[in-house]
Image (cartoon, rainbow, N blue to C red):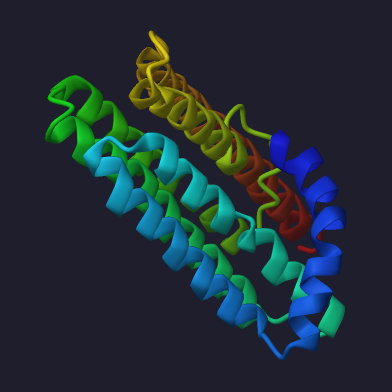
Length: 220
């Protein structure tokens, strides 16, 4: 849902920056790789130590590379299947690092096995949600459904909550509860989204099979 509206807005905002990078000879693939590396560093260096505020700041600075690289490719007229594959693949790596960082915190100094498990579920379900759409499309189905919590929602909910929870280290009371709440929301929402996509693929595949059977019957 957020992906539909926010992406268009931020694409317009980041277009001048994308043009600047192109003039400096930076390639879209380089932006993709640097952005992913920055997100991974922010998540796996800061989050396992409970430094959620600074980790979120670092991640936020790099996460917009996901919009910049595509913008650069379109402006330069070099959009390609390879670029789309690289971008999608590294998105999964970045998402895994974020929720892996949360899991490492709760498995260590955070000392909460339940929230560690919830973070791992968020990691796994996010990957599977993306896979269901990709797999459905690969067998010729449109997978025409806007899930309850897709990638944009997962990132916004978890990172905003993590950043606010990190204010606890600056003496703001009570904010540390925001991250557990966010993880539960993302976990439940991802499970619902997964169900939505599975149901959609089942319906679309049944319709496609029926149409194919009807077509073959009409030609005999």
